[in-house]
Image (cartoon, rainbow, N blue to C red; front, side, top):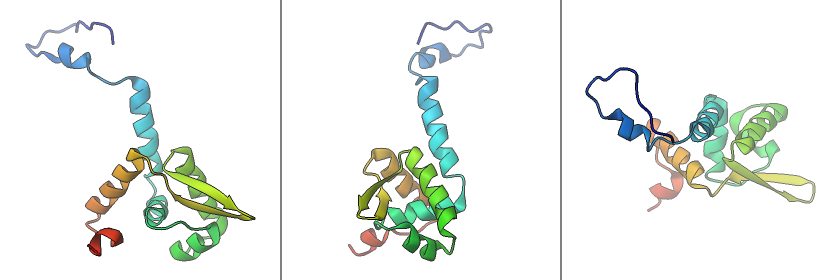
Length: 123
């Protein structure tokens, strides 16, 4: 980032902090992920996919939604890089991606709703 000189001097040293500020693109990427998780149904689907790999039909039954609605949410989660898919014949299976962002959001969801990950409860 280029050197910033603020129009008003309030006795702070924020200009040094601005040198370390991430780019607008970094903040846009974060906003995109938060936007995807702004829907409770999408959060439930993402949370389930953190614990299993499933097809649309089974996910639909798990969250009591239509397959087209679940497919829409899956598309959004995939575009945000939070889930991945694999094809096995005619069936497509989805799971949470192995990225640090997906793992952090998984933990954040569990922390916010005060639940314990099933795989952690067994320990």
